[in-house]
Length: 114
Ligand SMILES: [Zn+2]
Image (cartoon, rainbow, N blue to C red; front, side, top):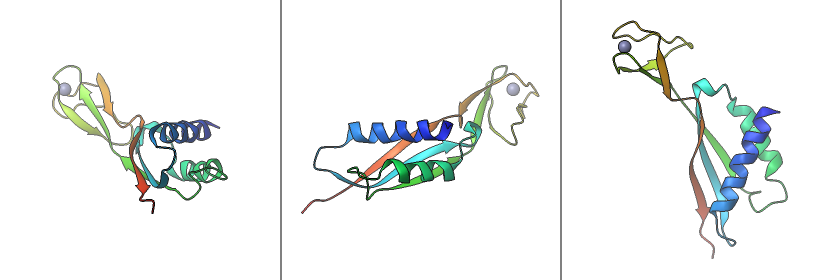
């Protein structure tokens, strides 16, 4: 399952970024609309992965972002709607995705111990 390996990647990255004593309360990730990743699946996988680990009390928050593309012809940057790549400035379809095709780990919230 594609989503499971993505969730596992996030999980491993969080583990690498926390101290041994840290209790993670919340992890926030950003998923681009073009990645095709379903946020529900990530949340579902997270709940499986965190069981019996130090992340068991954590929740994962998934934010979705628009897909942004840059026109290779005129350099216009625009938001892609419905997988439709057409520069609003010059009409070219030769564009490069600059945001929205990835999943990004935004933040890790750690509880204060004590
Ligand atoms: Zn253009």
